[in-house]
Length: 230
Image (cartoon, rainbow, N blue to C red):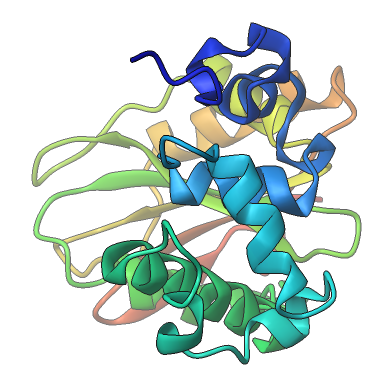
C-alpha cells in the first residue's frame, strides 16, 4: 500500500530538502528543518507531521525544546531512539552556537604583531612558501593563505592570483609574506622586484599592500619598517 503522506510524494517545491537547496535554510520553518533531521515519517504521518508534534512539546519554542530529554522525544510515536538522539544532538549544537563566543579576528596594526602572527605559521617550514594576509578596513585578518610553495632556496608568487584572491575576499589591504628556511632575513633583489610589481598592480584595484614580511627562526624583516614602502 502506497504511503500518500510521504514527503517524496509531495510537489517538489514543497519538500523541505528541495526548498533548502533552492531557497536556503533561512526560508524554512522550524518544523520543516526538524523534518529534514527526522528524514522518514511513518505510514500514517509524514516527517513534517512528526516535526510539528515535536514542537508542541515546547509550545513551538526551540529553546524549551532543547531542554527535552531523549526519553521525552521518544514518547512521540514514530520517533525512535536514533531519531531522538539525532534531534537532541542538533539542538545541543544550536545551543553551543548561540552561546559560544565569536572568534576574534586578530588585528594587524604593527609590524611586530604581523611578524609574530606569521612566525607562528611559517617559521618551522623546511621549504620556502609565499603567503598573503587579507585584511578588512579595520586591519583585521579576514583570511590567511599560502599561495605558492617552492623548494629550500625559493618560491615564485603570481601577482594575478594574489590580487584575484583579494577581490574574492573583499579585502582592502594585503600583507605579503614569505619565509627563509636558511635563517637569513635579508630580502633578495627578486623579493624587492616582486613586491614593487604587486604594489603597483594593486593600486589599480584600490587594494593597499601594507607590508612584505620575511620570517625565519631568527625573527622577521619588515619592508615597511626599513623604508622600502616610502
